[in-house]
Length: 310
Figure 1 (cartoon, one colour):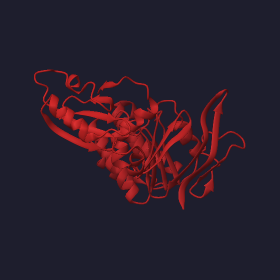
Figure 2: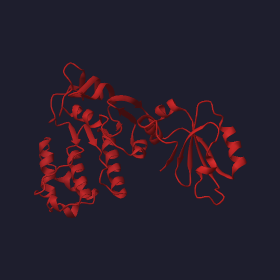
Figure 3: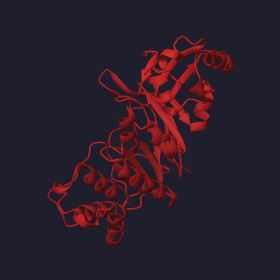
Figure 4: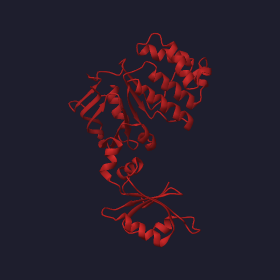
């Protein structure tokens, strides 16, 4: 059984079509990533999946865990919204116990302590939420979303506000929840996280689905048209001067010590290499598939400047 199935769903707000005839399937037991620019329809789609908002009348169907979406308060589904919100005057443990009871878990004290300990929040259990930093509050809200052991976990930007160490902690927790049988859907703007974590990746742009599949299948659509290169600059602080006007190169990404060159269709990578060797000492030359970041930019901002400094 698929965890989520969306068929030909549309959602409009006045004259604005936030989601346009969207269909997708989330396999049970997977980590399914939602990506897309701000305002593309990610959060609207997640909220419709939760039953917080509803599709336009007669526009399509949404099925969650084998049942039609009928409302937001279902015990088998948990949701971490993009807009964070905790009861500031409550103690941390009380907040978590309350969240567990809302999902039908009457005695989750053991799980509460385990998760507080794992996310390095055990010493804050008797503190009021208002005493927490933004990152701490984010971890508590994450625990509140997973403490009931949901069958489907929906996370809207779960890593916002977390430092790199806590990002890794939450990432590992998500993967462990998935290993225990929970299907995970999460939205993110971090393409590296999506590449590392997701079994399937879905991209929405201007309300329409533009990508849906495994990272490998998505990259295969674009082919191996990226050259990663490192050259001696001969004293120049700008390696793109050496790389400028290479035949068959339509775009350069400058990452400092490494540059990515995007080849136009039909370009011979060996001809590019020969030209580079004539210009400079080549320390690294690699033909590769485009990263998810590069694919995202191609779709969301195809008319950007030729040379991009990251």
